[in-house]
Image (tube, rainbow, N blue to C red; front, side):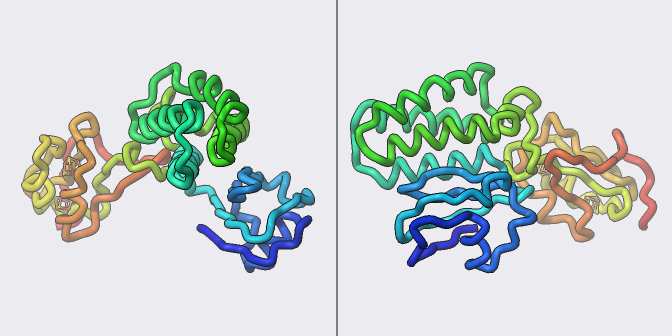
Length: 242
Ligand code: SF4
Ligand code: SF4
């Protein structure tokens, strides 16, 4: 969630800023402080005194926030907020945005984290504009703070926050399915198994996450899941509900 803060005291803490905004810090895993600070703060730093310019944007992240996706948003915003075309700021920003987009789209490659680690510090030093420098710093800091969460998208094909759409899976709940077959009829990817009055089952490897089944199910029996998956049968079984 974004908060615009004006009349910022020159030296204050994230805790004080959150208190001013009426935000409970207990459920947060990080905040982002916009330019000129351009930095993440994790809860262990919420009490540290920091120096701010007047007028800042604060963005909060909780357990359902994916930090790979969060970083991609910040990178895109910083890229769009400058017209600088220097090689490091412009091309480096493009490369980083492309890599992060791939990571969030389940297309991340084994060398991507190392590439980000190479690019970010160079951008932080060599970019001409403040935005390019901030972008490099933000990426380097995010890798230090949230590197394992970002890396999981590549190595385990998991978005542990459950927020990246490409990593969501579809599941049909035994407790709710009445075996009407409407989901089977709309699935164009042969990703649903079932027959009348049997609990239908999603074949994950065929699912293209088109969402048609979820929209058509009259019982609300189809759900999406992130890191934690519900238990469902491997093949259709007779419905408990008729
Ligand atoms: S999301 Fe689309 S592809 Fe996946 S099971 Fe549902 S209808 Fe089929
Ligand atoms: S998941 Fe929904 S649409 Fe599909 S068979 Fe079960 S009740 Fe019908």
